[in-house]
Length: 141
Image (cartoon, rainbow, N blue to C red; front, side, top):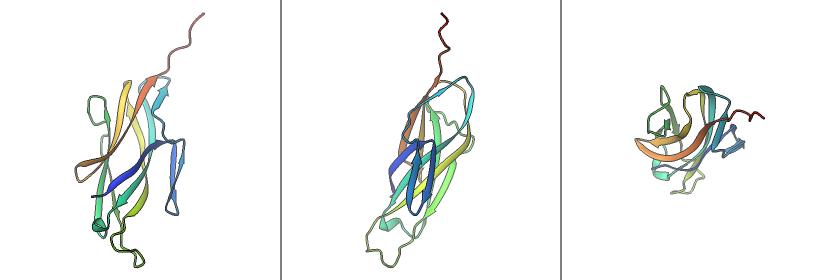
């Protein structure tokens, strides 16, 4: 089974030349002026694919859940990857696949804890969470 060794919320993520380029990565608190809020999310992901899982389609699903375990996304984000076996690769060698997963417009309606989960064939492989907080109004003096 593939495994995930990087699953990170970020302001922006790009993949180039087999590397993840992460801007503003690892945040865990989102402070907003008011609710509801609509905003995009980007997740940096690195999947480790075992030799035995190469040469086939690998289906992944990304979901966002609230603190009650309810799915937030109207439609789960699905991403399929496929990794071959290059001739020069030593038999039995794992391969890594860097990915950027983007949720373009997510509507959040209440404060609280939210989690993003990445699953493979129904098994959760990774989870990261953040707190949504409404900014307190300025104190009147």
